[in-house]
Image 1 (cartoon, rainbow, N blue to C red):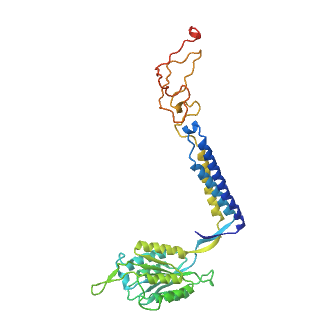
Image 2 (cartoon, rainbow, N blue to C red):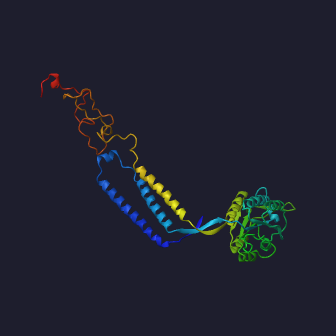
Image 3 (spheres, helix red, strand yellow):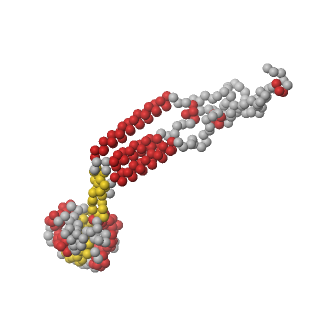
Length: 396
């Protein structure tokens, strides 16, 4: 996906001036042709309407657009494209406070979060390190940054609920774990990019301020992607058997994401949580790099050229099936061909002149001898042959 586009030879873009010029010329030609045709419409055009003009329009526009795309390719465009990262570290920070026991998301918030978290870890590139941090009243680094997916999955399955919510200290625990990231053997002096994925359903009620932690994370260039997980109707059952509402709180998590340079998400179902994790995986798993994209514009020009060629070919197709031949106009005019003469001057007997297709179209002049007979004239059933010289009769 290209985010920004530049050109290595921008001086060549002057050739794009030809695009509006060609469009203007074609527009003027089309209007002139249409005006001339409306004043000079022959009888044949009534019987054989011209093919639809939209095919010609599509062909011309596609050809001009193909020329524009080739011009852009000639200017050598470049842009920032998303390239898969080979190395990064993801800090997965999961809330295990008692409110995560709410069953507004089946089977409950924590178990659904565990399932989605394991799927998220499995989708990350194999070269990515994963660090698992759980938090309630205090954070715990369960798994330091590692590429061992089995160890991470086992620790996710072993998560246990606890009291209170301390988001600020959980962020600091992840930031402190940056020092535990194993160095890249190929580039030991280059720090690997990192990101924090924090999932919670409530706001902090103990510990350090989460907004200050987000500022420190931003200074370390580690964005925080927050996920507000749960619904407004969630509740837990206290020890006394009473329902205690635990609605999801999005405000604090939204502020953390904005301050740190990350992005805030929300999910009120397991399906939505999976979609959120998939979007985060795309954000964390790719980086932007500058690259030349000339080939892409050449491909666009080729596609548009094919469309233009198809439009031109459609203009040369045969007339629709059922249209009669122009020569003679017999089948088209609604009557039979004009009777001929036999050798010897005698007229053919038994020829019919009755119309079998009704009156001729409006504006069309029926040739003599075709169509219906005029008013007041009879319609003989048979044409008698007058005797000719070869029959022994007297000549006229």
